[in-house]
Image 1: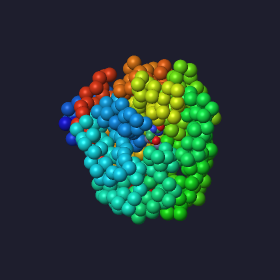
Image 2: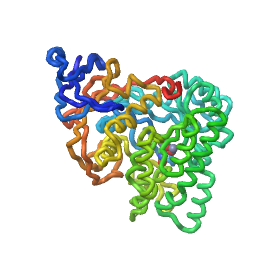
Image 3: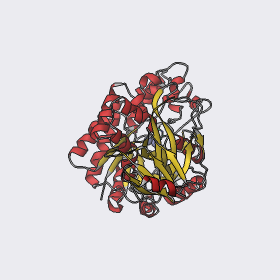
Image 4: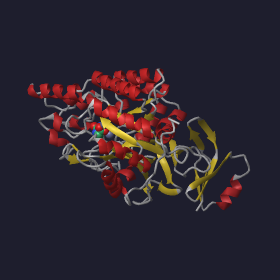
Length: 467
Ligand code: URP
Ligand code: ZN
Ligand code: ZN
């Protein structure tokens, strides 16, 4: 099977140029300038021709931070691998990296097996795994090497959530030493959970139970402190570090300082921190619970700082931290006690559009849009050049994007398996037109043509930023 996409503008992390793209089998076979004389021959050879006049062709989005079917907060995130990957591809994301979650007392490899069972045969798009380490002990540390050999070479640890996922500084140090030896990447949820838990207890004792207090008890300074501490531990152990879901100015300052002294410290942010604020968490009638995630959405001035961080590359990646819980029955677990609201946020479907909105608003260039949403995620997590670029030999994961189309985000029209939209009513310029996953047309003409089981597990190489 061969597909020709003609008449479009191909985007990459280095710019934009008019070009036709031919696929063959599951890969990209060639890219030619429209006046190179190849298009007529390619048109005859192709089984399908897609007209992309006036549209962008970009490498499929890569969302490196999702939580499908995650057990958390006494419940499960509601998107399965099937519904979550389907929603992702509707929004132009063709690869996800999800988190396998070790529970205390369980081994990393049995955890990985369980996550393979959940995902295998159910994904609409290709997927990889990171591993969450919740129980640091000798055998966990040894098993990190086995995970690396199995293509899972990034490990998330938590400085937050004491009693659940929390790791002490000593445990983090041990895991970082192992990562420094085996070439893997430690990903850090950087919030000072010990101090936060005291603030939470004090707020509840004062009767401050509404969702907004989730945000008020997790001050940005405690994210900044934890980020700095993680960077110091990484320096001492000579381990690379990737800060997940960075939300605030103090945390960005800690990343910038570490990078300026030559450390391999990287960070991602998420659309919710670029667009939403603590004002959303203060909405009445428990509506604020829809925006409860950790770190929390901040006051508005942090948003400008984060956009700037994306431009200066102190923030390298935008992921979603997609971890959806329904308003009814799940977020409601925390009525009367904000600390019981399941932490997490739906977003896997809208990342590409929300970042394109940043292009429209002049916050990002087209090239930077592609870089933070696809190319850098691929390089950071060992998938490049198979993913993250439109180039001969790469997987034909291609999004045909209409920059002039308009849409309004809403729970009534989204495809995520969750009963609300955090962006309800938001008008967006730009929309996915057609999506190819390994040359298969998965979305076209406003219809879904994919299937569960098309997506394959990606055995990832080590981060290509560390070689
Ligand atoms: O609130 C969040 N972020 N939920 C998902 C789990 C995590 O910490 O990433
Ligand atoms: Zn986290
Ligand atoms: Zn997360």
